[in-house]
Image (cartoon, rainbow, N blue to C red):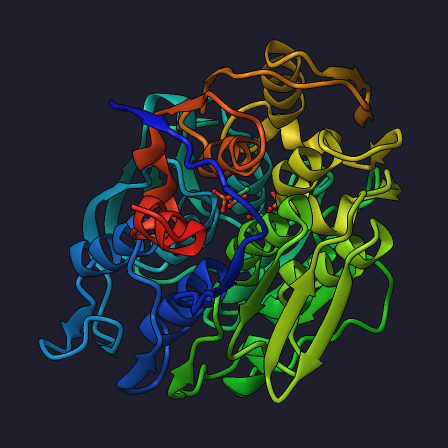
Length: 421
Ligand SMILES: O=C(O)C1=C[C@@H](OP(=O)(O)O)[C@@H](O)[C@H](O)C1
Ligand SMILES: C=C(OP(=O)(O)O)C(=O)O
């Protein structure tokens, strides 16, 4: 694990940054392709730790995976009968929550494990849901075993998905292959990250599976075939957010090509947030450009729908002139690390003035100084440290390699954006 000196911007950043594919779209596309009625090809596939773990897991369970030797982002998937195996989840929420329902369809035991920190991430909700749907599961968190029998009954299940939208998405992705389909009812505090559920529903629709969402907090998937479709993955807008934040904090200009005209990726909402903080945002000819202002203002926002942007937003808020109140994000305590605690601790270590609330953060303006920013094995904590390090001299980030969870070469891309070796 190396200590990385965050590059300091020596003026206004001017850069165009082309982002690789979306983690969330890639891992959904891979699961749907594996359960489909024929082979398909995914282009623009993100090749990072989380998506490589998904590819390895599907291979382990018997699915045919072929990576184009000329272009590793083109991946062909051939569905085959699922069998017993061992799935390593790393720290990927999309692997640990999307694959247990798939494992229920395998003809044998599927044993799941992951990184030490992954053992802390909430899983009981989806494992209990599978038990309620008639699937044998041993365990409540990683490591656990799903006793696949080649098919599963399905039916109606009531869950509290306030801890993660991935509990709903995971059940929906495989639901059509359960004998009776699956109806998921949510009861509890509001479900976070609902755009990610919309992404699941939209990608299922593209594969011919219509999810009935006519009742609030209820998703009904009838048993049906999942059609094989070739998917072109959009660029990852949550990772784009960190690069756009660089324009915001340096008063510079960053452009992201291939910005989708419409998308379910919650990362797209970074544009509104940076605009509210004083940036100029323009979308022209599929290129999104953010220009940073002289002074950033604070914001007061409920981030429940876009929780994964919080580390990026918090880093920008820590450099703004006014107070920011970020709320609706209690579930971030179950992300890669307890992000509310980690952000407060690390910003305060650099001289900041951040307090945790039950469901968020209050970030007040304070002069920041250099120091060590710890990543807690969290890719978005690492990139948040890099954002602050652009304008605060002497920031070092531990374990910058952890950014490979969703971006294969963050340090190289960041250095290139900053523009000096
Ligand atoms: O389904 C997905 O691809 C994701 C859903 C969200 O999870 P939570 O609902 O747990 O926040 C998000 O934060 C995560 O980065 C990706
Ligand atoms: C919460 C995140 O990831 P995961 O898919 O592992 O939940 C994230 O990428 O911010």
